[in-house]
Picture 1 (cartoon, rainbow, N blue to C red):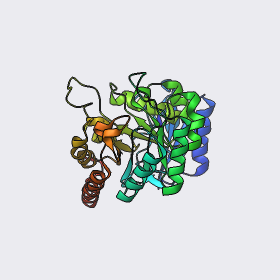
Picture 2: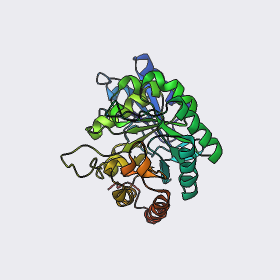
Picture 3: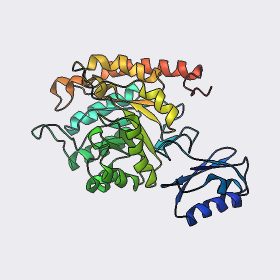
Length: 344
């Protein structure tokens, strides 16, 4: 349930509603806009009666939220969420580009890649220190050494770092080095991990599970949000379908659909969405045209030598060309206000 306060409701009226909800055994989530405050009831609230709150001073209305996800819903938070990762904004009308190799393979490889993507316009450096792999014999990442190299690249090139965390016990270590924690597709429903990242003061990039519905994806985000971390961005990275030609099927439909369902920023991953470097550019342009807030792209100076995902990695020159394309598309759509959600 949400309680919508009247325009310019007094603070003591808001406090009274919050206190009443807490006395009934529920938590609250406040969304404060320019004119009004929306109070969300967090928990299994079906036994609450909206009319009991509508009679309180300063309350305009109280309504039930039909979606099972609460805090992630636009009912709770009508305006787009915008937050910063070490000074880089994500959400709203900002275009955020994350780029780098699939895996941190060596100091030289990462620093070379970081310099190239920085020059081309990427704001956040991506790179895996711990890698979940289908085969136990595949390269699993450099672990702590990989985190140390990422931290060095951040300092040298003034780029915040996003990297994957795979288990709850690794959260404190990865959070010590990274500026943004990535939850990979295979971990999207690792609820202990979601709760752990929900309790740390680090932004989270939550990738969609390879066979997950949009509702399941948002329920995973709800775990993080309900544990106190409100800096969550969603990443559409393709879902598994019957089509074997591409690595996954990137769900373009999900981008505008999620913009209607949730206030959380949406990032698109054309690298995992296609698995083929020659398809990354067209799909990246489609992602931005569909209304996403940014991209995460795999870039490697020598893809043929990559220890993981070389086939879907762009060379720096191609990445720079793509950046010019996506910025042109974003600027055009932003100028025409096409990225604003339909409300009619």
